[in-house]
Image (cartoon, rainbow, N blue to C red; front, side, top):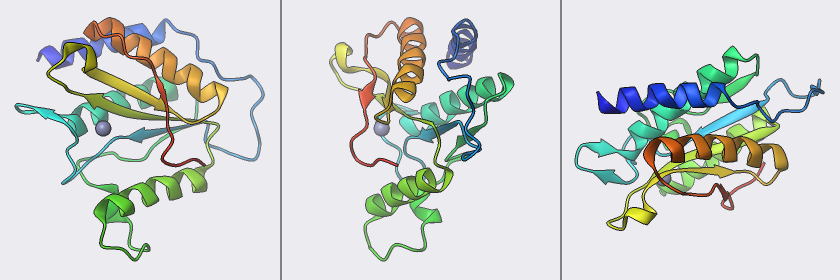
Length: 172
Ligand SMILES: [Zn+2]
């Protein structure tokens, strides 16, 4: 219940920010923004009691997706329920679930070729300074600007002070 009201505030904060997307729309790619939803299925991510990272990232991603779509952006989300992306990867011959998961995320990003891509995660640590939602961005200015905006909204909401981080594990 508390989570719901917090997420409601997150929506309002997001609406008040102008989105940092250039006016010129490329005809080559129909996807403006890809939202990479951290974890899923057997991979819960971090947790505290009943609160599991994979559920929070999905909730934030769903709200972000709806807000972007409402503003007329073509957004895509790479996970819409509680499953691992590794389960969708039947093409990579490896026993490593983690490698299958990463490869599937990279594959989708390549296929969709979005202008902007942000990844959603949540940290939990006994040290309060290391807790909270964390937005990762692909190495381009527009991805950074969206990540920064979403991170700022989440920081305000949860009284955290994370900075968005550059995603290094794969690029598109
Ligand atoms: Zn994570």
